[in-house]
Length: 254
Image (cartoon, rainbow, N blue to C red; front, side):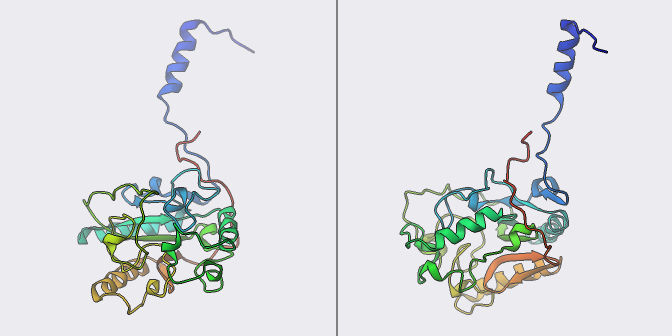
């Protein structure tokens, strides 16, 4: 039975609805927004912007949000808590990655070398990046268990905004020459396709080697394992069979 509502009742119902918090965007079962688990972890989601090796936002990254399997996000929150006594925190660069973005990597790798993004692969032909293991045709990121991250010092100001019109040094250069990041200097930038990015590389300073070892140990203590070619890349637990292709949207999207 329909009941007619007077203007006063309609106003009350509208007022109640406006007081309700925005509904979090829905995700597949078992996946969560990292901000809902630990908002203190800094996020610098590179594939949602221009500061990445393709020079453009990747398909499927409609929002700069980290999405992970719940157990991986909870383990990451434990790492963050462990680091607080050292005045350190985590900053994530990439988490869940839609398979459409992985396919876009493949298309990009077959094109000509791009001058502006050559800083990410200063000594290599980008058509060899798949064969050399720097980019995967099937990424663990698409299952929600992989994450790319680094250390920051708690309380430090954020990095200056990335300027696509500025010429930055190669990812293997000293930190002041590279694109702005405001993180601990690990010897290379993120997504640096070079031998110096190997976690155990001896081509970096002793201090940078210690920072990498500290990051690896902190992550290993909470169940993550590192990919030896990339100091920033970690995975949690066994790789699930299912890869996802849903678009990353704002966690506050209705």
